[in-house]
Length: 156
Image (cartoon, rainbow, N blue to C red):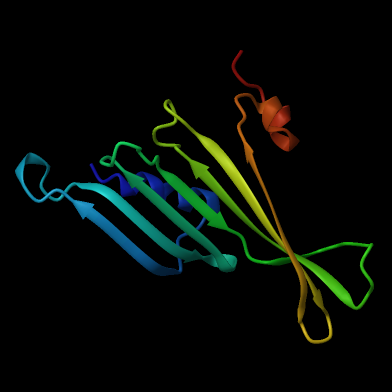
């Protein structure tokens, strides 16, 4: 079956690229019977072009509380324009987006967005302030998704 194939394919689609480096790849596979060597759980973390990091997980077995599949993308840190700051300071943000349950979406799914902000000195790069924001999002129509997706035709 190779469940890792689907999750890793999602990372390739998100980045529109192949990974440049594999940080980790752990999997569990059946060892007996007709499903010998078929994976039932995996977790991977890779670096993609432009310093993006992709992480994916899925399992078909689990405890009473089942954990759905996910794919997480961590974007590189970028400078954000903030006119309220003095010219000696800069604001940076790192965004992490997690797509939960896309393989088993009929049961449960959600997108989590986490932004980590830093205010730092342009002179010595010293971090002066940090804060985090997080939100979850679901969209069932292009209009709910917003932005450029709102112009797409969807099903009624």
